Length: 468
Ligand SMILES: Cc1ncc(COP(=O)(O)O)c(C=O)c1O
Ligand SMILES: N[C@@H](CCOP(=O)(O)O)C(=O)O
Image (cartoon, rainbow, N blue to C red; front, top):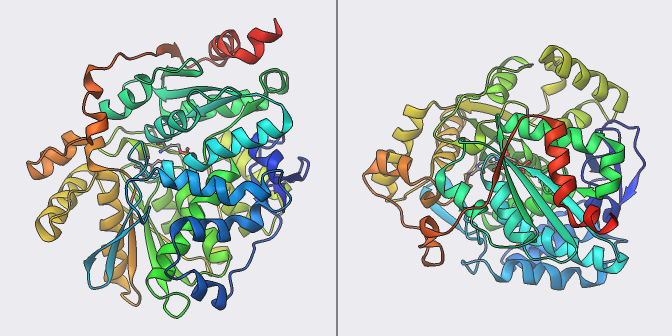
């Protein structure tokens, strides 16, 4: 498989290069040149198969030609063997037509583990085959950071630097990142928002000299491999609920648009997905966009669902590229306008065939939904998941034609205060994290300044230290 950049001005790359490159050199994101197709027969065969088997078969075409192609099945097996549920991403039925897909059974209790447990292993295998090392820089609003650190800790060929917005994650999220004892892990609290962190990461990639000196790579969903691994659970859920003979909708609590884009990719591959329902918190840029076709940035507000406190959803660029039929110059012009003006508008006609709709919840509605889920189903759900469940119910109230799956993106114990406030129950962390509050934290706090960040990273990355 070959991959092209959404902006059309970077080299077309193989899977291995896309994995190690992260952001394209023209500032774009990589997409596969074609969408591999899952026929109705393929989908029938996947029904009932173990998760790792579905994963291997769904992802095989994306890694075709890679140096790890022959070991891929083994890497996938290992990635999912450590999940605490045998089904990896099990479904729970809430109502006759509403299901919850638990995506938090990995080591850091969030859906990010599903992709990052595989990515860590892919990085290692490709770097080993090439005899190379790299430096990862990532931005997190709370969950990508700990999942990426867990996946990359102690790996000899990788140093990892994670930027989080100072004081804007939950305490559990911060401690999961900052209490890891590993020489290759570096946490940086940036005085700013998640959007600032994401901008800083992109600016480091766009500085060619810095990027080459450090051999930068990405763990955020700008890296295509993240999306690839997330496609799998949409396929798994759809076939479990009757695809290809029955259509299914998904409701996804959304921030950076990576998770829901993976659902869109599954649909492009032939999975019969009816609707992709986007749930937003008060930072509702996407929901407003799906209502009126105008993407307009506002300030970022802190909410009870901090991982979704995002205004600029980087993966929207991948959808835009599809909408514009891969006209990279047009994607670039639209996103340049967005950067300059803080807004752009899309012709609504382009959206006629699209499966998306958006629903927003403020903090009070989020708490009410957590309470409702506890009372109606006995389920403790985290604030992000609550937004997904509410979005699913609202979408079903409009048109209840097919079953809906709401994605449970984090374990409730990551957000104990909100869950306690809504239900009176304080969810317990699993035993292996029980002493999280006693562990020593390691992080530096830096201002939102590219130069300061680059100096810090350059001074601590083994790649530059060894070269000096
Ligand atoms: C718990 C949780 N839910 C939802 C989201 C939003 O997902 P995405 O950024 O892929 O849209 C995130 C962050 O990515 C998250 O950590
Ligand atoms: N909510 C995310 C933000 C980063 O998203 P990503 O999917 O691009 O890594 C987080 O928890 O860090």
